[in-house]
Length: 369
Ligand SMILES: *Cc1c(COP(=O)(O)O)cnc(C)c1O
Image (cartoon, rainbow, N blue to C red; front, top):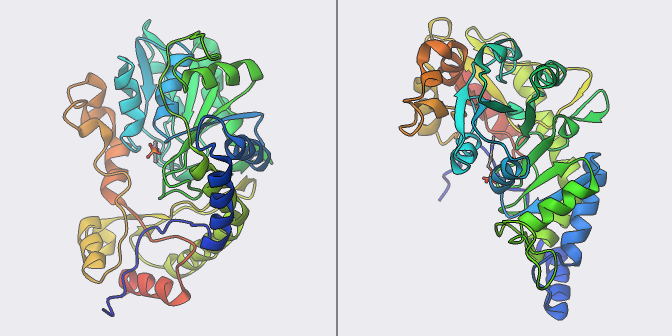
């Protein structure tokens, strides 16, 4: 109808001809789930692509978080961030664990390692940080704290597909990292996710966990859940994996143009790339200082929306403000000043592989005019 909508994201999808070939093969084999050949192949190809030792596919990105906490037998209290998608904290809730929110570092949006120690109590068993927008957490400092207090680390790496620091995948940090392959993420299997583990034995345990604890036809060796990925989505993922680098290249160009055009706009801040990090350009957050910009974040957000440009207020509101968590002592606003500030200033601009040059200029005009 001539309404040209610029969406925040657009799912990377296989071309139908390639997908059809895979589908025909799956139809012939009639092996449609339960660790079929495409499932095995996607695990292998992802491990190679990401540079990680072992990967377990899941049916979404929330179940590996929940399962990781089970597998590491995490109980009591876990230190985490309020500046994330709600699934991070919900994974603790599903395990009967008390979340303890720690404020973020305004330079990255990630949990501030300097504030972690003060939040540790005798009940603390783990830290669950998030590599927000794919920006690596301060991995070394967090590990030092974990080692000092005997804590486990589970990274919610839902945004960090393919991100490397000094040539090494950041998915190898901590004890376990988890990924989401939801349609809105850089790499998707429609719904899907994965867990990154360090040794074969843990992979075996996780594979039991995600299949009801079955070790073979008759033996159930652990409690378990059903969170298996099926063959159709594994095939979809295999095709997407072949084109994800190209999609990331387009995202990088979009980010470059945004930076060029917005660097002189008063009251608009953003982060630059780091030379030692391989970024994935999964998001392009900008931060609006209402006084300098002359308009609040929400005013800009709704103005963009009224002109069919859809940004995202990731992450607003903070997880700690939702009714089930706001009663926690650590959810107190005074405990989380940086998180509150960022949640009130952020807009993630449209960024995906299908944005045209004209789209990008329209977004820029909307912010600069
Ligand atoms: C997307 C996301 C998840 C959840 O992934 P699903 O695949 O949607 O279950 C978890 N954490 C973060 C930070 C996310 O962005």
